[in-house]
Amino acid sequence: MPLEGVPDERRADLGAPLPDGFGVRVLVIIPTYNERENLTNLVPVVLGLDPSIEVLVVDDNSPDGTGDAAERLAASTGRVHALHREAKLGLGSAYVAGFRWALANTEAEFIFEMDADFSHDPKYLREMLRVADEDNVDLVVGSRYLGGGANVVNWPIRRLILSYGANLYARIVTGLPLRDSTGGFKCFRREVLEAIDLEQVRSDGYGFQIEMNFHSWRNGFRIREVPIVFVDRHSGTSKMNRKIIIEAFWLVWKLRFMSLLGKTVAKDGRPR
Figure 1 (spheres, rainbow, N blue to C red):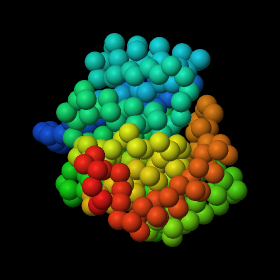
Figure 2 (figure 1 turned 90 degrees about the vertical axis):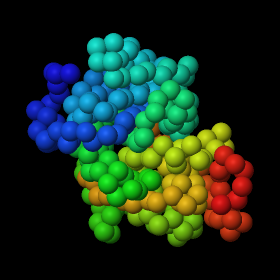
Figure 3 (figure 1 turned 90 degrees about the horizontal axis):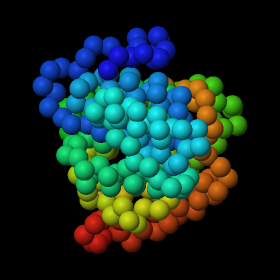
Figure 4 (figure 1 turned 135 degrees about the horizontal axis):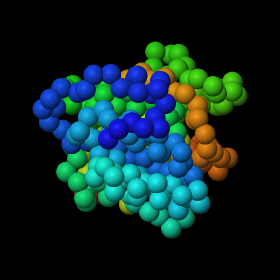
C-alpha cells in the first residue's frame, strides 16, 4: 500500500524490509476513539514494515468517523480489520475485545498492542518482534524507563513524575520485574493470551497494563523490556483520567495479595 499522507519523517523510519521468510503472522491491535487523522497516517506505516503484519482497529463508536476510516482501510488493503463497539467503554476492555477477536479469528503468533497517535513509533515493532521471535520471549514490553532514564518527549514534568512514580510503586508492591509496567506498547506471544482468563481482566488504563504484565509473569512466561522513546500524542485527546489512576493505585495491592496466595488469572483455574 502506498504511504500517501504519511509524514516524510515517518517514512524514513521504516528502514529495510524484514528478511524474506521471516515466518510469522503478526497482528497489531490499535484501540481508537476520535483518532481518524492519526489512524489514516499510522496504518500504512505499520503495514509497510512487512507483508506478514495485519492490523485490527477496535473503535469505540468515534463521533469523528474513525470507524468509517478503519473500514476504508480494510477495504483498500485486505490486511486491516475493524471491530466496532457501541460506545466508549474503556481502553482495557478494548484490548480484551481485540485479544478475543485475534484468538478466535486469526492464527497470529505474535499480537501487539499500540496507540494510534504515533506516541508509539512503529519503527520499534521490528526490534520487539525480533526479540520475541529470535530470543524466544513471550512478552516484550516497549520501555520508557529502561536503564533508569526517562525516554519521554513533550510531557510536562508533573506527568513524567506521576508516571515514573507509578511504575516504581507497582514494582515495589507487586514484585513485577519491569521498569515500565504501565506502558501500552507490547508484543504478546499467542500462548500468553491463551493462558490468561481474559474474562477476569477488568481494569483499565494504567491498571490494565500492570494486570496483564502481572498475570503473564505469574503464569511463568518470559518477559523482557526493550528501550523506546515515547513522544506525546500528535493530536486527539488523552484517555487518562483520575478514575484510572485511582483504580491502578488499589489494583497493585490486589495483585500483591494474589501473589502472596500463589494465585493468578489462568484459564485452567489453577494457582500458578
